[in-house]
Image 1 (cartoon, rainbow, N blue to C red):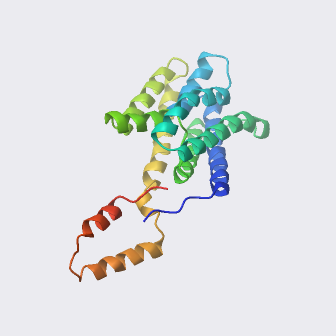
Image 2: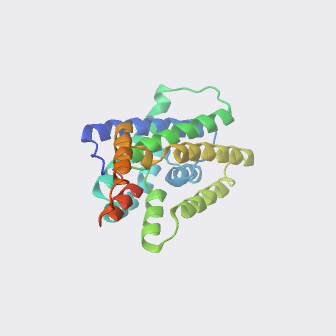
Image 3: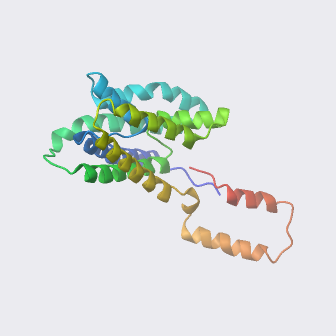
Length: 234
């Protein structure tokens, strides 16, 4: 059964909230010279190479990927991703005006920052959005050339961390790996679309399955089983 779409107000509020989570996580990383993967990692690397703010560079990096998302994924996904990326770009530049961190332990910044970004990305996923960039490219390569998205993402993230050795100390790269681990654990343990169905709906489906087991299967049984095995994403 396909879930109803979120309303525009729900999407905007959730994506702005998610952007705040991600932006504050990036702020913690920047305060300790830590690194992250994906388009955000590319933007952080760029701030070391050229004199440009993270928010501006992060926004610019994502621009070419919007056309790819528009044609290969969906218009709604592209618009929501644009909202997410713009929110993160703006907030990362504004947070220092409201928050002043005089001291924070790098390991705490890695763990808490990774969790914050992971929660923010989860919220984006639930509202048909992403942080753009590498994630969009990974989806395209998997759909078009059957290149596993996870493998591509891991390869790019590894290259970003290796390149970071040119700009930050090696122990900070190791701590950044801890941050990436925390981020991915949040997503892998919680991003389970098959668990999103309400308990009452799961109960009804269980009752229906029990009733159907006492009847003779008809020609549509395979279709219903296939639909349960492959739930539709919002």
